[in-house]
Length: 262
View 1: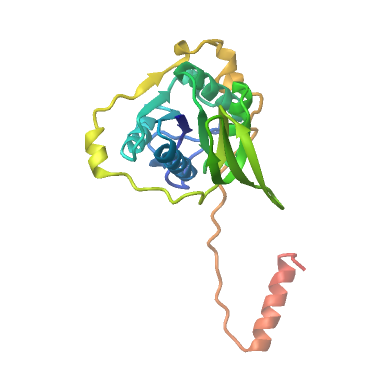
View 2 (view 1 turned 135 degrees about the vertical axis):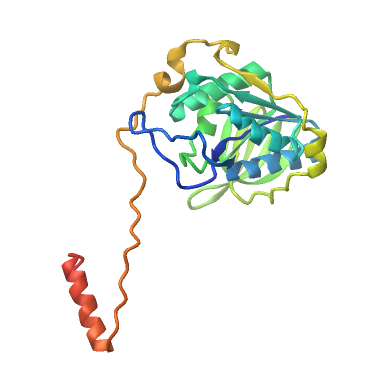
């Protein structure tokens, strides 16, 4: 079975600056890590591969430093990785990101199963996976919490709906997004890290795609624009009150009235 896992490099801290002009995160110089949800997608791929055999590929989009998460994936057991990196991809919203990734998938060949984490910690939209599948014209299932059976031509999964659990037999090739906790992610192997330190990482840009229309990528291809984005204000003001129970109750009531909560 030929499996592709989509992974992403995300900020490793909540202290990230925002570009006041474009409204996108300033990622340069910020500590980064692999998106935690993608670790569950990788482990799902490993479990399926151990039972059915096959090759595991990873695909990510980002600046050149995003190679680091592909190297991390190699040290966990991934066979091949591709980075989509081009300044023309920068500033993409969910739709443009999904389209870019779908074009990257097409440039890599055919896959039996594409696995994505439920969402990313920097975007939290949980939309990229399903939108990729629509662009690729393949069936997809989101919120998968359990792999029940992998057949030759389909996969049976259990998905977590708001009020129910549903079991679906979905025909391959297909795309699934998996929930946190579907499997316990394995740790990178030092031996594999050493063994794969020189393994090639393919880097693709817009010129490697069949569709090379710049209006379909990055900010140009993003129909949604951020009007304003800002970091939350830090409010660490505090007061310590002392007194009897009656005095404290009166003080508390007066404060709530002053703040117009009551």
